[in-house]
Image (tube, rainbow, N blue to C red; front, side, top):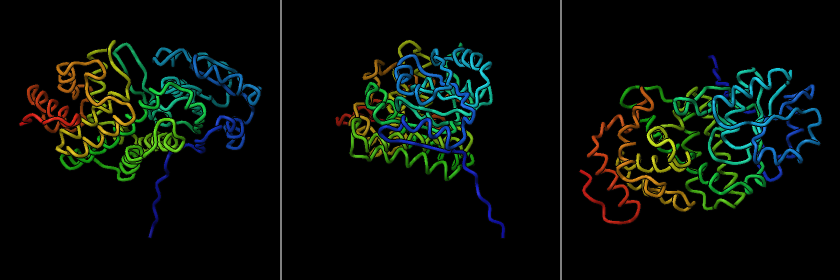
Length: 360
């Protein structure tokens, strides 16, 4: 009888601990990622370059480049700069936007990429996707995931707390995203990958139920592991379904409709996820998710991120247009604007502990 195994795309090394940055040279050598020493280090202009003095002695042959930002033009420009260096590999050093930029540039040149995350703002640190701003707004580009990943908790704690909170919102939204995927499987027969769904959902549940806070190493480790598992889940299924559903459609709609006012990605998808759970009729789960967001200092209502109820309702109504062909609770219910207004009013009352208005 044949035995069939799935080869799971994942980094060859994942180091999450205080002081993990000191492991970088050893990982490059031990995993034979850069044998000749012709290494490129592409660092963000802020946190990345501040770490250069610490890392440079251990990487004597490295060429250093600055990542200009998180746009498609920045990523292409970086690839052009790297092209003439005959490098073995690229190290991306910085936050989520910078790592997305370096992933794209490395993919364009066919080079392995090592991610050294300086904050935990979203699951792009280990995903097969680069989210980059372009002339049309924001695009998602398929790229190989990092070949290795280092997350130094000492560095993470020095980042502004809002970055950790953003990562919390992103991981928690997996719970809603997987529910949307399962809905599409039941209604449309969309293929559901049980392993990818389990990894993404359990990453969200682990963060939701962890008793620690943003300054706690145990919690930061759980959050970092959740972001890594989310990225690997997307890699093994070949798309973003494990971590992107109605929650992300709502966030994309806010980005497109109000481009100069959009809040952080994690804040938006967190609210979107809690509201989507409410729309499914899973009111207790919605309240639990909102309580988890609130406990870590994240918003649970649109007005808390600078949007009126009317603007949020408009974004929810527009949200299905942002991902044509994707089936979530929004497409399933086909709500009118009046329906959304009533549902959102009921959601806000529920998560704030007040009497829920009639949502029928």
